[in-house]
Image 1 (cartoon, one colour):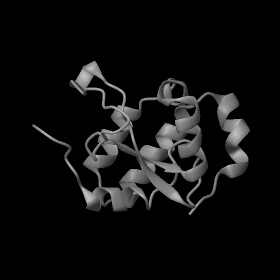
Image 2: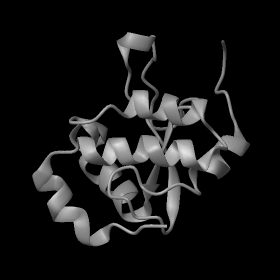
Image 3: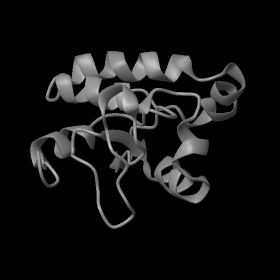
Length: 124
C-alpha cells in the first residue's frame, strides 16, 4: 500500500471521543501516532509525513501538546497506543464501544498518574 490512507469520517469520530490519556471530553483532537511497531509491521513516519488515519488516538488539546513536548515514547511508553488506535478504528462510529476501549485504557495507566489527573476527568 503506497501513500497515506486518509479517513475523514474516522477522524471526525475520534474528535467526539474523550481523551484516552486523561478522560477530558472537551476540545478532543485526533492525534496521529508516528512510532514504528514491528508487531504489525507499522513503519515509522517522519515529522512531515503523517501515518495512516487509523493510527489516531483521541487526546485533549493539553495532552496533545504534552505529547509533542516530551515526545511520543515518553508520553506513551506505559500504554498500548497502536493497539488502542486499531481497536478504535475497528469500532469507528460506535461511541459506546469506543467509550469501553477508552475506559479500559484509562484504567491501565499507573495509579499515581490517574490520581494526578483525576481532577481533569469529565464524564459525559
